[in-house]
Figure 1 (cartoon, helix red, strand yellow):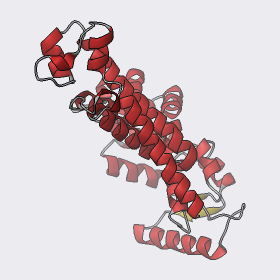
Figure 2 (cartoon, rainbow, N blue to C red):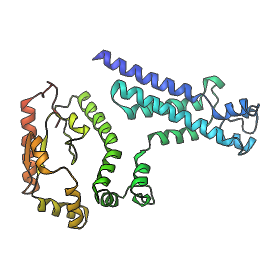
Figure 3 (cartoon, helix red, strand yellow):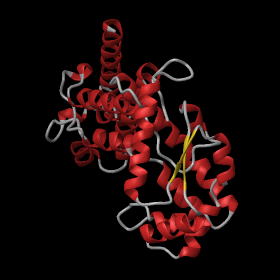
Figure 4 (cartoon, rainbow, N blue to C red):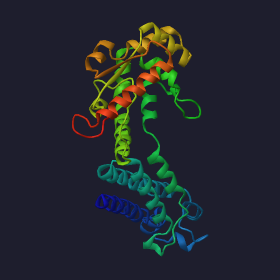
Length: 298
């Protein structure tokens, strides 16, 4: 265990170091030296940032500085994500550490006497790397108006369009499922590292997807169709017709029951369902282990 901890620490150090050296490639200094044949630090405020570069040379070459400084940070974040995702199953930590290293390298570059820029473009590059990339893809497929003015997703409108036809549901699954499964694996790995005795995945679409492979047991929660329609309509504030359309687009109940290890009937009140779920968790913990001898995932 100690070896694994030190290996993880070393990997994080390498990610920060790689990000630092990428960050040292200051866009203002490189463009002014190799293209303009000058040194931006000899002008104006003496700073190697975009503001001093723009004031000194104008907008003609500023785009090159922007692309270099943002691009190096995106690269540092992605490299960090790949390394830590491979070694520790933590993409997000790798992205953050890579961005941190790039920020430090940009502000205190070893190649340029530890005098760099202020890090605004680098921070923007890090944000670009961390931001979810699925929203623009969903907007292209289902319409730009599924994104509100503040950039958030209108889930109800997306659902109305995605569940209107089978091809819409298939497109939604193809776009979102890879990222969903990636996050499931990260959460599962974190639970295992934390010593959790049980990992529970709650989802409407598990059977027949890659997420099913992450489960050692499958518990299916069922309710009469009319009851489910009424509950969805009340919860989401939609018409029963739209709620029924969503249900009909999902995997048929018969197929789910055929794969189920456990079945929970949700035809009473919430308290009854909670009691049944708690009893199932106690049963799983009492059984201990799984088909492969590891902690159970449901």
